Length: 174
Image (tube, rainbow, N blue to C red):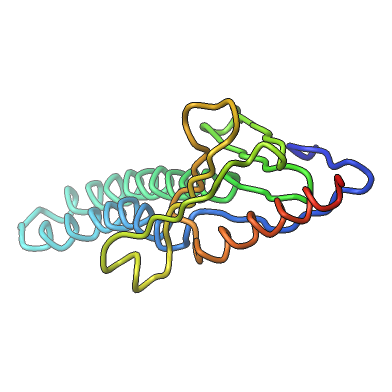
């Protein structure tokens, strides 16, 4: 079941997620943690255990290592699912902000395109410049806080698309 529905004459103009760089950075934690059993195995190779103890220990060690790797894998899947299901959608009539919060909670906010007062793009730092990401802040009429598309690729392009869609919407009203 989709998180939003479109009117019969409504079109999707743009869909945006956070830049892939941020999911890659978040994935470093479970990936690096998954290396821990290998480091422990390497360290334990220098200890001299009797043959009976070594066999029992090896079986238990690899059993718990597989359990640990399963947890790391599930953690990585949760990071990816959160990134993939967080979505900003610009249509010809509205802006849809979908925020996935865990596996079973989702917040979907919709803003009419005619209530847009302005769009600001903020890009800061060498990483943002190199990877070409930034924040697009959309000021909505009657709302104190702006709607923020965080760390999206090509934020200036998103700004242009939003403003162009807003202008087209206002032209079609006349």
